[in-house]
Length: 196
Length: 284
Image 1 (cartoon, rainbow over the protein chains, first blue to last red):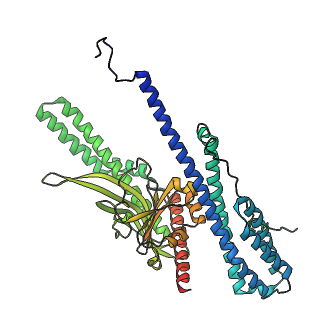
Image 2 (image 1 turned 45 degrees about the horizontal axis):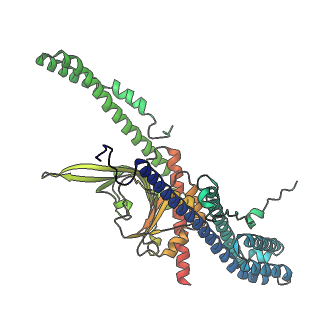
Image 3 (image 1 turned 60 degrees about the vertical axis):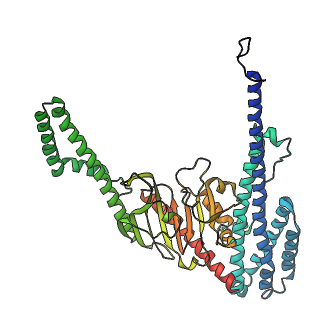
């Protein structure tokens, strides 16, 4: 007890102690929120790498696919050149936006080759072609799955940076919204044709 | 008609037990004995409450017996519909961390044989229980400190043995985990995957000698997406040529058990396909 009878709380008044405690809590929250945002952003980047891996697998398969077709339909060189060209552009593409366009073109070109195969019964029956076609189908399924993972991560990240009170941290720390990755693959293009 | 779940027919069995000869003998002999004991002790309370306690006890025993018999009937019929043999109690070799978890463990209503579908996998399905035990005092009195129940499907995948030395996809434990960690003790490391939805639900650990590339090839985006969205949230462990698929709760109806079995078959197919691809890579 102090001589005047007041409780001795050291150098700080109760008000100051409460203020410091609130400040410490806010600091803890800010650190936790910032870390959560960084974690989310890293997950988005990781998911993009996942798509990249699958796209690279597709790029690696395309030359073999073209070679297999060339053996049976050599005079369809224009269609095959379009695939090679689209592949080159897809390999050179960087980032989701550019990749989206380039991969869309590659998908279109591969679709044209698949349509071409309809006119060549020997090609349709070739074991190597069928194997590569099946492999391409599997890779496209994986691309779709990787895209869903990426988009779900982007959605979680975008929601996190847009909701209160996290946006108070996200804005000043330059956490910007990411765009979704939309890519059309052969399976989506294959609309069943119904004739009456 | 086949029972649809482990509770089907329980009420009928309960009523039958209460009206049965055994229950009548118990009422008469037990109630009479309680009444006589009360008279001998000159206690009106025992004379009144004793027979009532006997009735309650008989009802409790009848309820328990009815529940057990209903479950036994359900699993026996479910197993026979799948062409599997059914054992009320079974013990499995501790080939994966979960199968070796706890101080003592067993399976209830174990259904074993060639699991239906193509390709035919050899394995079994049932309820897995493990207990943690503490021993006290000089006489070593045992006390069960934790009992966990799982629905488990074990599939033999011998060809996977050289490639899967230990891959464990388990429920995420979170900050305040429930129960003891049965993987922590073994020599394992964490494997991070890119999906946030998957990470919210699961955590992945691998044995220290597990080839990470093979593990990542198995956990491809399509499988990760499938696991993240599956309504049952199935977990699995692959080790020593054995795939153990489980959910950390008891599934007691034909619909969910069939769904769970389909999930286990799907996972077994993926492990087998990845094994074939790893073999092809090795051959190349």
